[in-house]
Image (tube, rainbow, N blue to C red; front, side, top):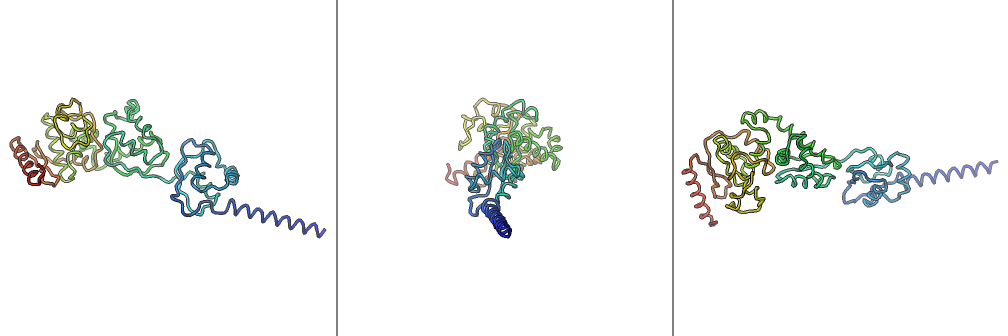
Length: 343
């Protein structure tokens, strides 16, 4: 009897030690090693369990599929499809901690930075650098007239949806989720600082303000003169004068790298060419910065209707009330270029 007790005790000890060995080797031991290039794992939408295993293996955090699967099944992580997203891991995590984190779905957000994109397709390409959807899927929404109409836009005006800023998104945000978030941010922006009321006082919609702001954006890089520039264009609109804005002619031709505007641009027949057509173009010619939008909403009141670059390297413009005054400024511009050896 004593021998049986000894054998039973030894067997129990062996099982205990074996269990402890298995636990610490495959379960409790660190699964996420130090020194990884980065600690972010991206699991695409509709991934299978096997695809997730391959992703984790490629990341270097999965050494034993059998041990992982045993735990994944017991912890109810295994499903079809798997939970998608971008997850930040921590060095030293065990398999249990790793699975618990992936199962919990607590994602690490990404920053989507929108600044000075020119066209909707540029916005789509920029967003696709940070979130899961392909740029073509996002761009398809920008061309879907029915969908855009349902949120109050057209393919020509959709650019006015985007307010330059840095936005936090989950990596697996859908194309519609991206647009809907941008719509919320757009509305929140216009509801601040009396922007809607100021647009109404100008007799303009937010989309029209944005369109004019996009022209101001391309005319000057100097924030302090944007309100004066905006005032010039508003004066032209009020008097029925054509805007004759060089950036609109460049946009019409899509000749964004041109060093100077010529008849090749100003004579090109396009509704965006404000040398040929009165009023605002059909939509923005680029993303407009907040400073340019606010410059239109808070435009300087004056009676200038002409302007030209000073040509002195300052980036500033000379403004005039009359054509003779404008011609004097043009002559000074040419003299400044000659002084600088540029003509």
